[in-house]
Length: 374
Image (cartoon, rainbow, N blue to C red; front, side, top):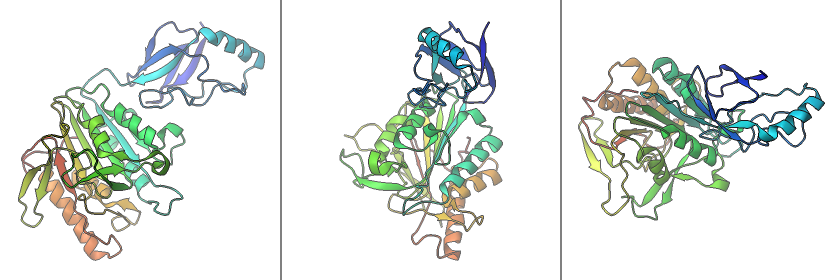
């Protein structure tokens, strides 16, 4: 039987696939991802006739990533290749990679936008997501194949943090989510405030994420982020969002905001839901947002902590969770605030305004007894 060798895009394991594949799907034996197959002869070949297209622009998995790469080599005999292209008129090509079918999964989308060439470019965003990936994979047990990184450093065009790619990544994050799943969304980049037009914001402003192409494609509002990754969350599933950007206190539009007095340590939950507005909770799951600052505050990159540019929230979050086993949300919030406050007081160029990390949630709980479990 004629076969071809390929790699699973998610885990990198080598796959040996028959050229004439009659099944509708194949499963990677290593990471269990299912690759759906479909009659599409033209997607993987470019018009110049030099073989396999390295990640066809119209072929994507569940979030827009090519399922296969580098299948064909340019040193094939042209006559053989031309004949095979004709044969491809009836060949089934991979079209979509679906999430694993097992439950209790850990999955993450890490998005860092540096805005290269822009007057307001950021130096620490890429460092942030690389540090977060190492933390999740090496310390928290997330499978490497289940962590998606979007930065401008990625060679794959589908992993550049454009508006479309971020939207597809967020849909992938919750696709097939079930009880026992642990999801993480980490964002490091610019954020902004946009006038609210649907009456669901207490302060009259929507918070927004700025993709690398926001000047042409627009921003992603908190309303869309909530609808995409919060509202579909089923009972027994948990989502943690770590949002390292300005104006991020209510970045996920969650119903409850934790207001803490940093000096005294006491707190209260403030209900941000509006009776006549759209429901902003989950389908029974727990969604928690840990953000860099309040909605009217700025956050910043700094070299204070390591000598290399990093986001203050990302660095303090990772350090605190690593150092304290069975860490509670109350302890995390107060420790991060103290760490950032000390850095601000010691270095005037850190940021010119107050930055206090915030906690919001889809439900109320005792922040000093509930432990963080990623």
